[in-house]
Amino acid sequence: MSITTAFVGIAVLFVMLALRVPVALAMIAVSFGGVAAMLGIEPAIGIIANTPFSFVANWTLSAVPMFLLMGFIAYHSGMTTGLFEAAKAVLRRIPGALPISAIFACSGFASVCGSSLATAATMGRIAIPEMVRAGYAPSFAAGAIAAGGTLGALIPPSILMIVYGVFAETSVLRVFLGGIAMGLLTALSYCIVVLITCWLRPDIAPPRPTQGNVLPMGQALVKVWPVLALMAMVFGGLFSGLFTTTEAGAIGAGGAILIAALTRTLTLTVMRDALTETLLTSASLFIIGVGAAMFTRFLGLTGMSSYIASFVSNADFGFLHLMLIVVVIYLILGMFMEPFGAMLITLPVLLPVFRAEGIDLVWFGVLLVKLLEIGMITPPVGMNCFVIRGVAGKYVTTGQIFRGVTPFIAADLVVVALVILFPAIVMFLPALL
Image 1 (cartoon, rainbow, N blue to C red):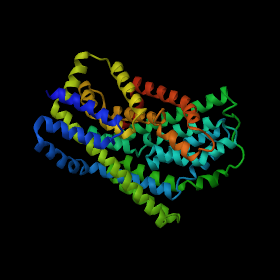
Image 2: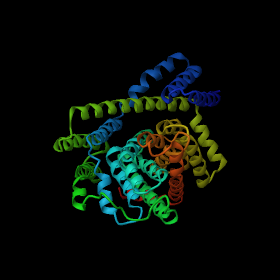
Image 3: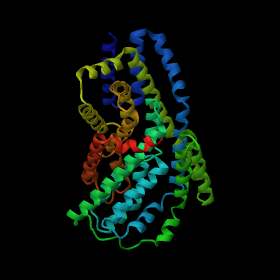
Image 4: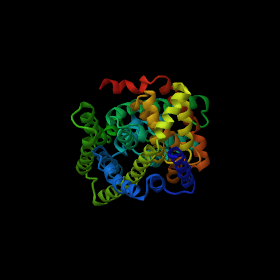
């Protein structure tokens, strides 16, 4: 009876999602209704009364609004605007210098932001017009920035990784360290795509070095000192063990405010916008998290998690077969759902399976975030592509952006295959702890 209730609940959940019911409300409603059907109305009321506090009171989650505040202050104060200029100055001599510079700038922006959408929007405004003027096809320029935006959630601090660490009950710091390797490997794969395109298709990606308005090396590097200082402050203390992940969020937010004040870019408007976006984003993430916590309890009461873990064990799936199934599931979900919803709906089902199979949850967390970020650039709901359409609509259409991002998706799939075949790529840095 309980397993039947679980399957009915999952089916109802996906029907509600198909009807465009918000993810959080759908999970809360299904969990409440399922528990009420099994145990009665009073236990269901107890779960809906206690879960929000027990979830939000998790100390590790306090890093989420702090890292968000750090990123929004850096964004609204213009702290990150010099990243593209600095990358151009360093890489100006190589073929495909502009898109490669944009990809490295996305990596730098990601280290103080943690949001794919913000990374894509910021770099899209700055880099796409310049690439189009330099002769790059608008579709290729937009595709490079849309793909580069996915680095926002791969390179720490990553909000997705923090929430995953809480749900998987694993070390957020170790997931961060694995994310560094995944982010750098992804950026390298994108640069290889640019170089190959310059070689094979000079009509859409001119191979000549950067020309025109490039700042002198020294002047360009001076413009990025705020970002470098903030990175050194947060990651230096975090990876040296001086403070925890949670404390790093507070240090980062305080450091961003201090640096913005020193550079005289901290205005009342900047603070108001940063605080407003932090509150709105935190609230939306936490309500989804509450729904996922309730859904986890519901599935736990039904015995669904144990049932699926037993089924996988009895089916005797090999590691590669299991990973292939997981990759396909997340690639399909990524086409239709935003990353947090896709992650938190599936974790209650998949985590017991991976624990039973002895799969390292730190490694899987990094792979999971990578798969979710591929969904940010796949049609029909590739959110990064629509953000690029919004900031560079006069240069490119939505269809052109999806075409331009195709070779970068191919590179992403190669990276996923390498990480599955060679887990040490991700686990090398966490193993040093």
